[in-house]
Image 1 (tube, rainbow, N blue to C red):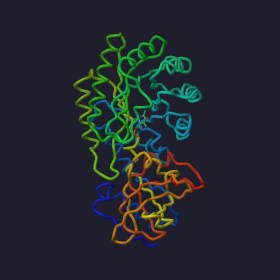
Image 2 (cartoon, rainbow, N blue to C red):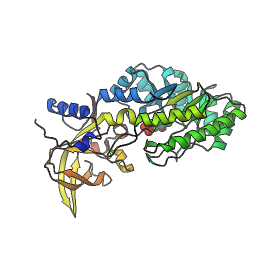
Image 3 (cartoon, protein in one colour):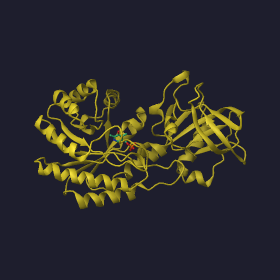
Image 4 (cartoon, rainbow, N blue to C red):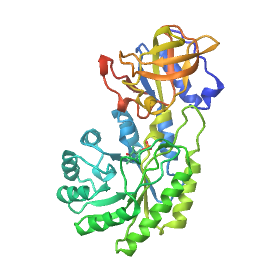
Length: 384
Ligand SMILES: *Cc1c(COP(=O)(O)O)cnc(C)c1O
């Protein structure tokens, strides 16, 4: 089937031309019915290459929860970086593709018993924590484990804050490191997360200042740290430009050089930035209606089967097969739940029922959140 997508200059500022070109080519040559998620392998490769390049001694661990598709994991694995995981499911899938435990760390501060048992058995060495309860669990399940404490840092300007759930202030973090040592664990460092989709470069400055403070206090308390895990948070382009990876990394590198001893290990855990802008959802308009003074478009992908983050405020860019004039739409998913509204007041060309809609930058936190609620299947992921 011929498809005529309205590709504008503004779209090319969000997603690489080559990714869009490959997507359109795939659609033209396939009989597979939407919805599905296309992942551009070249883009993932490029992002893995870029992240951490400007940070001395950086070791990169892909945060699996962003996109745990097995083919994506195989691709990332082939690029030689490590993995950050939180659960037995993530451990199992990595084991199934032959990733050795030496390349896996876990930075979830609260781990399930089953996961701890399996992680210990697999030989995973690095764990995060932010409570006394977790120290006691780690002592029981992974005696001698190397641990880093999760420090609370500002999450302002990140579109998906993560600081409310985890992390402790400097005083408590220091006490926890001391406790960990007392309980026979090996306190090696500090971790933090500036918040996901962090568009504010200064979050890393505040975070590293706080980490330096804690680092020095730990040292005075007789704990020699050697590892700084700066988490994830690198932003991608959804509807507008964001600060680039190399600018963020050069800033981080300079700050680490100024504030920390030489030759520390620096761990990075990017999720969104590795896979987000490599992904394009191929969806189809399945309904059109005027309701009150709103024009509604229903797509075959919605909040429950892929676009969960729209509920938290992530807005996407859409490429539509449609007429030249744009109109204002309310975009909804396919399910019968009134919560299943992707976005309101979206200006888009008018498509027909059956037209294709491409959703850009949808490779991260989409399929990994998706459920089969109401019987709508989770779109399959295809690497291109
Ligand atoms: C989710 C998560 C990440 C990845 O964050 P992004 O914002 O997707 O880069 C990294 N580390 C931890 C501990 C996380 O929970």
